[in-house]
Structures are given as C-alpha cells and as structure tokens.
Image (cartoon, rainbow, N blue to C red; front, side, top):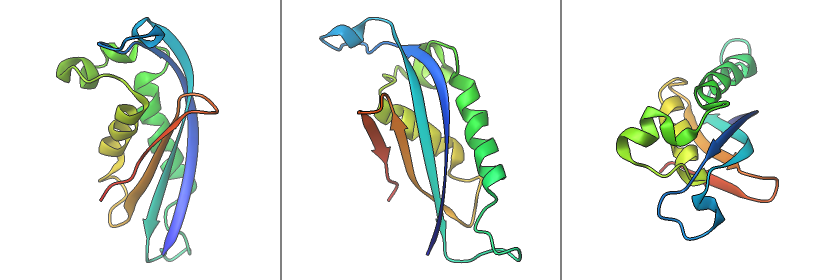
Amino acid sequence: MFKVKVETVFSTSHYLSGYNGKCANLHGHNWRVSVEIEGAKLDKLGMLVDFKELKSALEEIAEELDHSVINNHPYFKGKEINPTAENIAYFFYKKLKSRFHPNKVSKIEVYETDKYVATYLPD
C-alpha cells in the first residue's frame, strides 16, 4: 500500500453554537489541514497521485473557507452544523473522496492550533 500526504493552511473565524465557554464567541484560527491518499497501484510514472494535483484540490477547498466566518458557509449554515475541527475534517473528506479514484482518501487532519488536531478516518 502506498500513501501520499499534502498540507495547506488557511485563516478563518468561527463560533460554536450551544457551547458553554469562550468558543461560543466569534474567534479566529490559522488552520492547517492535511490529506492522505492511499492505494495499491502506481501510475506509469511511478506515482500514486501527483503531489501538485492533490495540493491544488486541497487548496481549492481551503479557499472556500479562507478569510471567512465558517458558520456562514452553506455547508455549515444550511445544515446548522457547528464548524468544529471534526466537522471541518469531514467537510474536506466529502469534497475530496471521489476526486482521486480508484485511490482512497484515508485520512484528513485539521489542526486548530499546533496542539489541537482532529482526524477523520473513513471506514
């Protein structure tokens, strides 16, 4: 099994509805998100996936959120989903899962800070 991983960063603000504490207030983060793709076969060039392609896809999704209030993004607002690091990781997964077929998005990590990270591992 081969794995490829890329990361990007973006800055946003958010608040957590129903939370009892400071995070209920609007506040900002410099997020870091990483994605891992896994698969058993390499292409004719010997690559699982081109780093450039994967990074571009990841940055395209991050751009949707960058310099915004995440709560106002249609994915979170429309479904009234709290923009926790866990839900943001799942958001990235949903956007990426079919783009690199037949390989699998095997891991999404969202760093809210250097010390706090949420991970989504699909079944």
